[in-house]
Image (cartoon, rainbow, N blue to C red; front, side, top):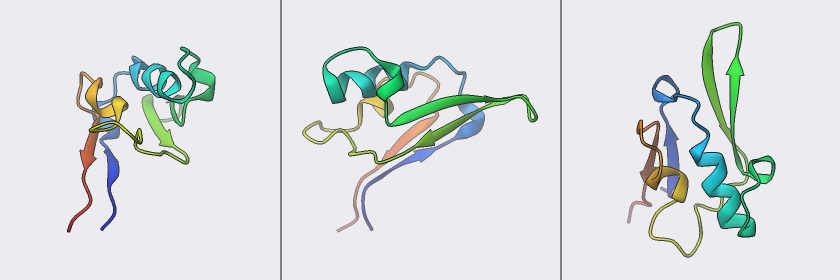
Length: 82
């Protein structure tokens, strides 16, 4: 099994910290628009929705930064199984 980030949609508060730290990892600048993780308000369901696209799991870091800095624990790192 490969490593991945598990998403617990119901815990997301929409703070967007994950977007900010992801963009910093990618460009060393705070540009949420280039983040590989996006937080979108789903008005039909009245809740936040998290999407990830082409995540590199913060290569070079011990764990993905989005997981490390997600205070409500909506993101959980699952390391690769041996």
